[in-house]
Length: 167
Image (cartoon, rainbow, N blue to C red; front, side, top):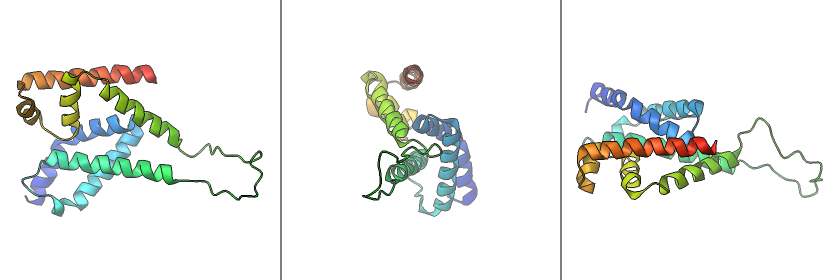
């Protein structure tokens, strides 16, 4: 695949990338950052893409890995503690730092919300988020294509309702 074809493929899945970034981050600004980081990483690594691999799945896997790595970086940030320090007077909360517990709470809520979907919605949505195309999902689950599209649509809508209630 030449560079122009690669760029066209990447442009054609921008909406999917942004939707997945929003699903992962639950925040527009963070989603845009994740989207940009992913785009740069994909363009930097275009020589590693193999033509017979699912392009969308490859890109979304890169996005998911960037998100997970960023999350792990946040978790690793620790305050160095002097053992002789007076802990009662220590100001542990840094107002400017992102709250790591919020991220873990959001991830757990998202995971729980997806797992609580009915199997008819959960499996197609999970496959879609993993990078499968509608037709591939329909073939693997032996369900008509239109039914798969509807189930994914309704699964997204149900997730949005559940997550809005939690906010």
